[in-house]
Length: 338
Image (cartoon, rainbow, N blue to C red; front, side, top):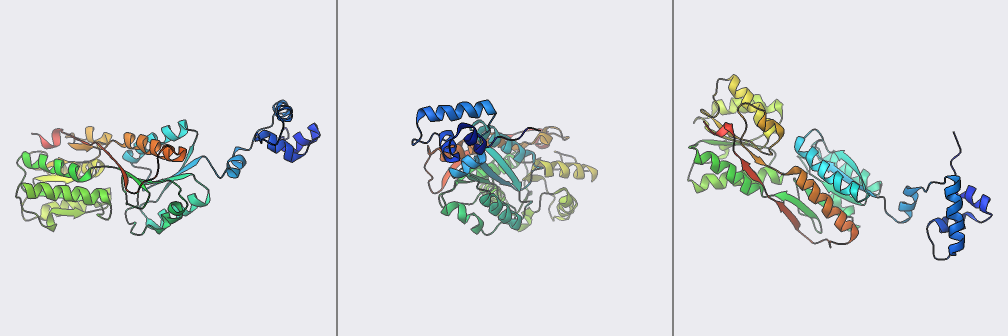
């Protein structure tokens, strides 16, 4: 294996100091053009490779962007990450992706690790149980761009990228009501997170508009995990009035519920009409196909990438409560139509 060429090798060959070589390679104005050309020519001849990390460090720039997501095994989050990666890679940045595994403590550790590694910006979708946001204070204090996506929290000088989850929840519920459903159940995630709380509020808005009954028995909070399916089925079967409309805040979880309900001899949509959320591929593969809300994950990632690059380039000034809201769309399929 050939020896790696260093600036000291170049300096010795050229008969100049290592400092002169370094300044020449970094186009320092104190070095004459003739000397710069000599150094660059010899560097190319000997195969010298610039240590880009060291150069970026001297400029207090790492050309890396940190991302913290709840889980990497989410179809939706994978599409978001694909959009982000396309934009930031095209702009010459690399991503460092970590997952909180739905734990605030893991999220805190990831935020600190990424900060200590010198990322130029941070993109975050919050963990299930995050209730304190002090672990982002270093980013805000040092004016490192911080953007929340999907599961967001409003912090000073931080951007958010979302959809109108409340309106989406309203439209999903009103669709069920328009088809004759009167005893509805919303199955959501932890309402500490904006996405699940806002969808619940939309669910309640539609019920109130149509003067249907609502109390806490019409909302079931879960982890949206396959492990919760049996308890959801038991809950549905135990309700005083038979559930005829089900709004589930995840396509994947809704597909598991459909499978379990069919095992219990429920007919869908005749007995229970079901609406999911996200428009994940499984929504068009399950039988019956699942009515759902299209959540444009890839577009969200593209916008997140564009926003962070614009902030790093200085073409966007950080503004408090700078929020981007994407369009959603209700996709009607067999799970709500006889």
